[in-house]
Image (cartoon, rainbow, N blue to C red; front, side):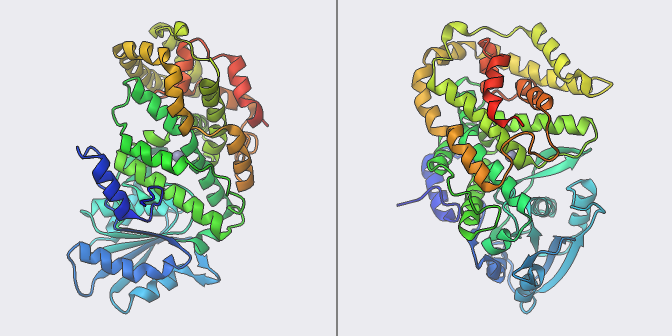
Length: 472
Ligand SMILES: [Zn+2]
């Protein structure tokens, strides 16, 4: 039987998507290969040949290998040498180590230009590295008219190895932009297990938002606010979330089985958001709390924390809120009230006004807020309907959200921070409360916090209750 939670069975996934998406609303899954094993690093030449063949290129090819200045080792051997050794007999290979002067590479315009310039004239790109390096390669691939890319994954830090977008820095702010699917992703679990500890542990923090975020996406769809929703994508997410992530012990120490499962979960996440043409399917309350922390840090010219680590802690808050909305009679139709635009604008100014002298951050949040209010107004009858029939939807929500009692021990076992205070930089109780309390005022995406707010339920009491266990 087809296992749709297996990201390495790409033909199986394509077959499933063909069946479940006859109208072809989803993007095509253009990954040619995805291998997760303890010998994946030895498949580079094979991946290169298959990718060149798909691109219609035969004979000796010109290959550019992009790395950053980090030397990545695999059991004492330099990974780039292991990769080069496989290719150089059959093709011409040139290695370009990108160095923008930062301790870790930044995917800013300068780096992206350097990568695009480095691959001019090449037939194929090999990238060796973690999320940023792979994302830079994907942009170079797309700017060069779709050169095939073979990505050698060296950490299980993010889910962006297996999708068609890249996270880049624009004027110091992280943005997700369209790029290209890599042709082949090779994830060697031994190399990944040797990656810096916090890369893999924060990857686990990111991964557990799989157990909260889809509910926000589903809610948004029920209310008529998000037309990216697709049942096939949701089926994939539910299949991946069917088993709670109780295997995370061993992520920090790089144990093969935990690393394999983490890499697999992240790869499936990437594939689902790639084919869904949106990150909304995996970005709910927990993500916007993390974005709030980033916004605060950027406005104060402080270092930005690891995305996945922040998302992991915030997922525990999201889970508590969601389970309470599912398991109790919190949501009652008679509580629903249309938001007052003037009051909303005042709250946004109050929440974000202090972040910059010009007030432009608050203005941007209010601009997004107005879009959301317009959508709410337009779909008001659905709000009435969904809150009236809340209990029936809870059956579905229940399949999408794992309780914090399951997620917390898994997060603790993974070695990723499980409180705001344990994050780096450490988040004070005041900042954490600000981030949670105002998270729904930041962007135009709708989530459970918006609904609770519209029902007069977004109180200090509820927020303190939801945050009780994640405070320092
Ligand atoms: Zn994320």
